[in-house]
Amino acid sequence: MNLTRIFTEQLCPVCGYQLKFTPWAEQDKERHCPCCGIHFGDDDAEESKRDATYLKWRERWIGDGLRWWSKDPEPADFNPSFQLARLDFLSAELADQCPMKYRKLRIAWSVGCGITAVMFCVLWVRSYWW
Image (cartoon, rainbow, N blue to C red):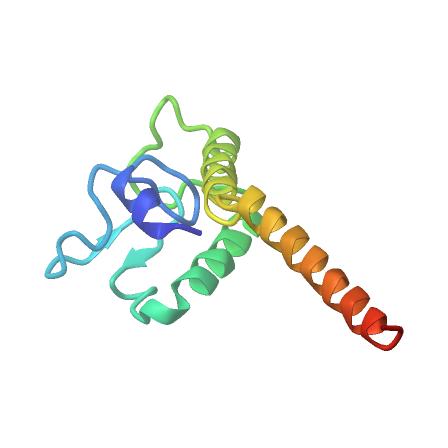
């Protein structure tokens, strides 16, 4: 999960809700997502475990029935299915960009190394006959 992009778009990494603030932009204020209830800076304090924390919170939120967490009334356009789909789409889009970026170059490199290895084997075997 590319948290930088998700935070830049002001999305909650747990539920995909469009936040009115950027998580972790203001370190001095404790902020929370009104949709799923995660407290940025408290529940996800350990940076190395944030991905796992967000996934655990997402499973809990889905298990609780995708309910609105805040005491404030939920907005008229509240659609948890759309939020999760947007978050999944963004995660898939980022996954497509990163690992597959140099795919053709890696394939060409592997083919070139394979041909070179076969040529060395042929030359080695041939050296016994001449």
